[in-house]
Image (cartoon, rainbow, N blue to C red; front, side):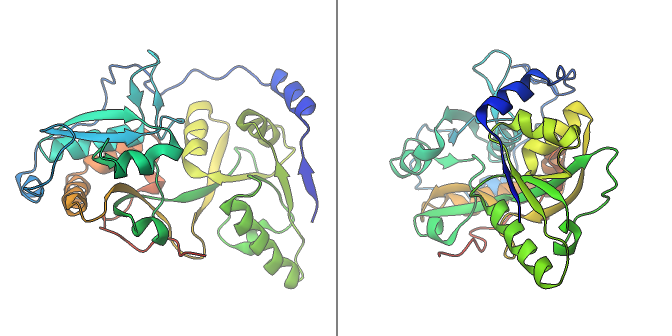
Length: 307
């Protein structure tokens, strides 16, 4: 297998060649006039534990890492947090008859923020794992998906299984789960006498995009959300397949709460109410994440195993 790694100097030069970003069709304003909203569900609200000690009474205080759209980032005012995760957080709070307060939290700090009682829950693209379930409860709210994206004019129509990547030049992240998946797929292909794939690694997402749209790579295989957002915004790439981040197992994204706090069943109930009334699907679709919708939320679903 050949591995192509970019040098920083080449990446910098490539950035100069990038075309101007197309005008965004997404609302990045702090007002979020089109944001999905709902009303209180008395049945879901009744499942909230009576003896739970809230960070603030009547408020669902949520830790969130505004790392990038469409999951979560800052609006054009550089202070209001917008995206799919904050929208789900708002819908859950409204369903439970609570106000929402978002607390910006660095990814590495979310377990401490939750365990120490600084926040009631964390809604920040946290994957469910068996190790995390030892200390936290989870209410699943999105599939963890990696997506294969190609240029709009690519001859590649579908990538669903190992044989579909044989001989392709694929961009992915070094040392990531998606790289592990591709390495295993390539191993199977080579054993079956198929052409090996070529992995390409780029540190900068913009350089990844340039490599794909310029034809230097055949596909980009990385987390689905950011790629779906770019595809919808720029209109230059399209999705040809998704693979669960836990392949060959399943990995969901969940709302994390303190172990045995009693909040998880209520949050799961609220999420399923949103699934049933269509608000959940509406929120994900607004941020081009319809592919990641779950048919139902679960409390402490199976997570990635401990290794």
